[in-house]
Image (tube, rainbow, N blue to C red):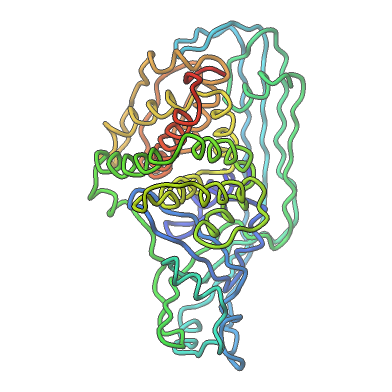
Length: 438
């Protein structure tokens, strides 16, 4: 809920350079002057910014003064959503069953913010500042990985503590057709009351701006606007190029033994609820093995596997992890359910039939999902799949296979296509059980 709310606030007030914080749990890491890193591996999606637990001032030699910041007057943002569904609708999207009942969901929020900015002229005063000697070890690791570095120059933070409320109530007999997230809760047996709240604290950062940090020699020599993917670059490629990129990584995974693929598949599954564990696995994929639970099992298995010298499994598994990191926390949770239900193949095909005809279009175009791909999903599988699509930015209704293409969905849908493709490859070579056998 927090990320959706942050995105809505950014859409109303922010402009293209303001970025919502993906998780409220990570908000404390996006402070003024925080250093972020990013490893650009694909032209089709943008990796999330990763805090390195250092600020700009931490890497400068003693004596560097902290630039002054400007704080705006507080401003307010309110949002209330009330949704109601009644059972008894006619469903043509492949959902079986019927229901008698009613569902109501309400979300309320009213928050006060302030903007804290480092004026450009103040930031420029740090040009050519000297670094610590010796330099912090993380800078060396960033260079070895080919990371880009950024510094946070503006934050939108709360000026009061508050609670975001999300309350749902269900009165139903049988299967209820409504929003995908509520249906998943209903199918798992929680059918009475589902209140939810998120407590957020004063000074918590909800969104930020950044500039790229360029280090030459032993000094900070240049700041420039944060470089991010943007649609101009994607427009140079088409869906065929995305397919080719994903196919190469899938073929690399296929070079691993079935035993190794099974270990990767089944140990990534419990890590999907822990973004930090996925990040640790990415960071250590080429280094020493730590005590990482399922992640260390994957790394140890890869290093024990005998394979031709030209096969580099870390590259394809790193690619899989990077696609996953583009997805939201909600999508990672839904992905875990998808893996357990063995519906990856049909989900991948649904993403393909959305992306392939619409990839080159910057405007909104209606589309209809093929019934033959929806039919095998049924019930909860369809709710999970619609949730994955909706989290990408598409508006999905379980009572209808129709939606509208949204350009903002292009990047996360491309990452979702890559994730589903590689996970499907791991599954078919790690087990003889047929796809769809839950």
